[in-house]
Length: 431
Ligand code: EPZ
Image (cartoon, rainbow, N blue to C red):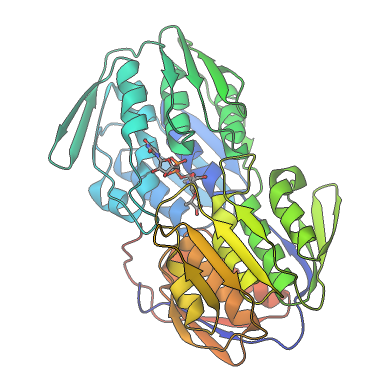
């Protein structure tokens, strides 16, 4: 991963123009797991050509399915699903491989995978995934770092999550589709990507109510059919990232093909920082002030609160805003590594001992430097900082960023940035 890097020139003018956002990473990943429930063909449109999509396709291939990506349309034939093990190398590359558990258990009655370790964002427990599946009758054995789950037909259960986990909600929802009886998930995650997954499942015959609320009810069905072709929802985090880039550079852009209601807390903060926002059917326009105002308080929360996946980008923006800001990360226990890298560019960010509270004193200018991405969104934040820094910035470990952005360099260049991707492709160990 170290070889791949972005070279970013500091801008004297703002980003300008229109940019289209592709399909959502955090929607396509659970949906590419859910296709395993069906033994036929699924058609998925607006599929983002990001690294994590290709890892999911690798998993599908290795367990006996046939995925084909033509442009942004993915056609997957899952008739031949034979394996019950999620490939180790894929789990190591992408921890959300765990989303295949529910689907493979429901389809084949058995699934094995290596415990996905922690990653750059912290511990990343999976107790809720396992608790949910065992409540539905799965027999789960953990031997060293291997998990083996077995079940006859799963049985519906009442499951209360101690944390509104996105992944656990998705895994349980998928597993419950063909269970015998009704499953109720209390304190379910409410992210828009959960609604998109539910729409996809309903399109193959599932009976689901309440997706997008904290109480989801899934009534098990006996059979499914080839899903209605599904269009992946727009990626609200990619959209938010480009809006912050325009805000930091004093720019004026329109992001197209997005759903503004998915970004309300983000838009509210951008307005608080002095931006003018206009939304109209599927587009968001932002006109930035000459310099952003600090934002006294940002606290990340589960949806519909301020999204943790936008925290790093806002820390970068607040680093050059006028005044002092306080940002608190409540979802992950280690989503802070971008702070040290931004400080190497001249930012004044101090992090409390709990690694969750950032105090940011805005500075007039950052200076270009060679910095390293430590995770996906932290890496994107460093690219954004490079746009406003004096001089040239090199962001190493670009592979992290490619996991969630189809081509951040193409998109930012189309808005006037000077950015290039350099270095040889390398087998990457991603989180
Ligand atoms: C999903 O991760 C997203 N990934 C993340 O996006 C996103 O940041 C996160 O949800 C929160 O919105 C995908 O959808 C592929 P969680 P997930 O389970 O499901 C704790 C990005 O940048 N927890 O909601 O792994 C966990 O430790 C990525 O696009 C348990 O305690 O997140 C964490 O502190 C990063 N037990 C908190 O819940 C469990 O069994 C939230 O995790 C599961 C989670």
